[in-house]
Length: 177
Image (cartoon, rainbow, N blue to C red; front, side, top):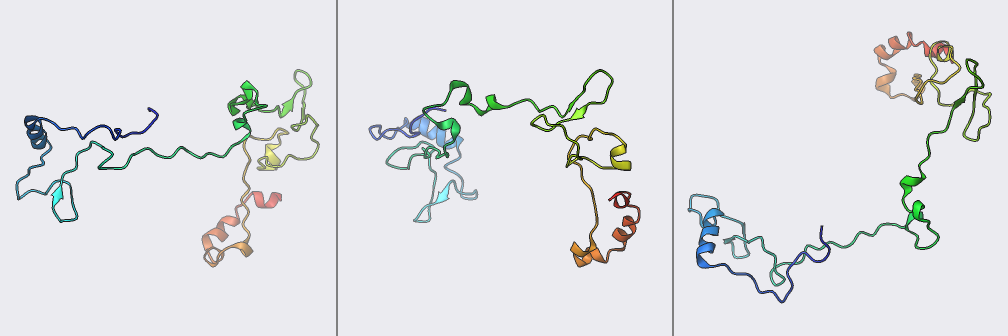
């Protein structure tokens, strides 16, 4: 896309074509239509339909130049104290942290947090299924979702639904917590 205005300068006169080319253009664009067809263009203030050509001139139309975007500044828009490689935020992406480190081949390792501190308590956000995460020490991928029905927080249509009450009897996760 080019920079600058998208309109001819005021010094340029409106371009005219030869009568033969104007007649051919009007025939191809169906400007001079028969009375039984829809008129071209939009009605003007006098009620007559006028075909407006696509050319844009300063004495007939306004320019199409939009205002430049006003984006909020950030750490990457600083003029000083902004190193070349840190100007683009894509360079600051780190690989995912290690969640599990094995101590030696074949032995069970230790879970660590982002500061490489060992985690002894259960990790929040792990999936819990039958027999507490299928008996595995490692969390399953994802954040997990535990569905638990609380009748006191539901709408009347769900409180009185016999199908939800029937399905709650088969909820395996309800017995674990």
